[in-house]
Length: 116
Ligand code: FES
Image 1 (cartoon, rainbow, N blue to C red):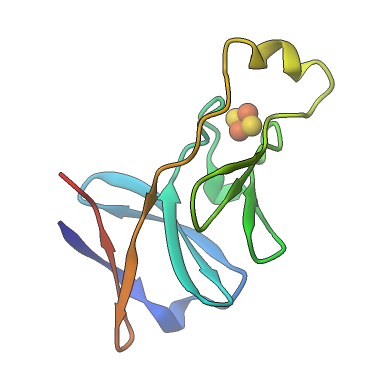
Image 2: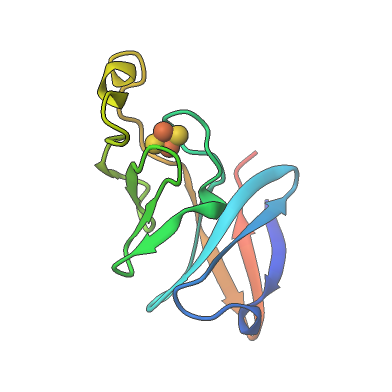
């Protein structure tokens, strides 16, 4: 199902923001080539990726243990690695990609597609 999630003019390149669509919490990103959306919670220990950093027009870095995910695909680029010792936790929290959601534009309007 498709949900309206705002206007393209509300975000500048390199920004992200939390949005909700049909009860699903997402993070919306504006990169150099368009808009992307991922699930809102990190797959490691559920930190809020809306407070993460966008790195190199490509990845979001989790604010808690610094896992990095490709925003366009959800792929893990680097797993949780901070602070020292978090690797012990990783034995029970193995790498897991983020779910991504297609974002489309119609004029100024942004829409996200969420499968039921
Ligand atoms: S919660 Fe995101 S890396 Fe641990």
